[in-house]
Image 1 (cartoon, one colour):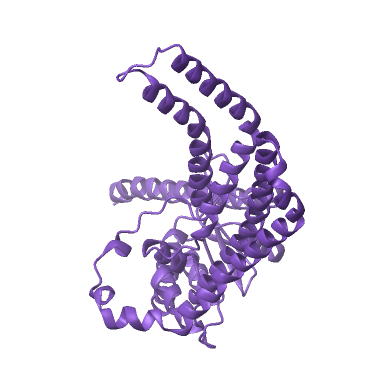
Image 2: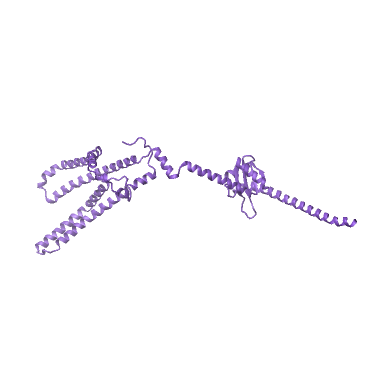
Length: 377
C-alpha cells in the first residue's frame, strides 16, 4: 500500500537517482510482442514468393537426384542452409530491430552500476520462496493468464469456424489443404499479436504508474532536497544580508566621488558622477532613509552640492543600479541639474580667485608701506 504522506511528484533529482539504480518503467513483454509482430508481418509479406521459391528449389533438387547428380559430398546441404538463411534473415533482422527500438523507446540507454552491485539477499532461498508464494506473485500469474486465455479463445473460435473444412480436409488436394491450414494459422497469429500488443501497452502503463507512485515524496523530503540543492535558507539569507552590507559600504565610499547628490529630500539620495570624457552620468551611490542620510552627510563633508528633485531622485533610485549610466529618458533632467552645479562651481571658483587676488594685492601694498614709514622717521 502506498504511503499516504507521499503526495508530491518526484523531483528531477529523485528521478535521476532512480535511473542510476535501474528504476525505469520498462515492460518486458512489449519488445518481444513487437518483435513477434514484425516477424509475422515480414513472413506474411514474403509468403507467396518464398513458397514459390522453395517449390522451385526442391523441384530442381529432385530433378538432379533423378539424373544421378547427387554425390555424398555434394552441395545439397550448403545450398539448403543458404536458402534457409535467405528466408530467415529478413524476419530475424526485423524482429531484432523492432525489439531494440522498443527497448530504447521505454527508457533509452541506461547504464546503472548500482543495480549490478551484488546483493546477498537475492541468494536467500527463504526470501525467494516467500516471493514465489506472495500475493504479488499470484497477481502477476493471474495477470499473465488473462491474455493467454483470450488467445486460447481465439484459437478455439478459429477451429470452430473452419471445422467443416477440417473434417473434409482428407478430400482436398495438398495445395488446398496447405492454404486452409496456413490461413487458419495466420488468422490465429495476427489476432493473438493484437491481443498481446494491447496487453503489453496496458502492462507498461501499470508499471509506469507504479514507478511514479513509488517515487513520490513527502513534503519534508522535497524541502530537504531543496535545501541540499539550493542551500539552507538561513545561510542564503545571511549571505544576502552580508552582500547588502557590502553594497552599502561601497555606496558610502563612492558617495565621496559624486559630482552632485539628488535628494527626495528625506527618503532618497542618489549620487551622480560626471566628467567631460564620460558618455553619460553614472550613479555611484544611492540609498534610502538611513543610508540616504549618510550619503547626504558625506556629501556635505566633501563639499558636494545637494539638489532636491523628488521625481528624479525616485526615478534614479528605482531604475538605475550603482555603476550604471543613467537612461536616455533622464538625460534632460540630469543635464539641467549638472548645468546648475557647474555654474555654481564656476561661480565659486571665480569668487575664490577674486578673494585670492584681493589678498595678494593687500599683501603687496602692505609690504610696500613699511619702507616708506621707516624713511620718514
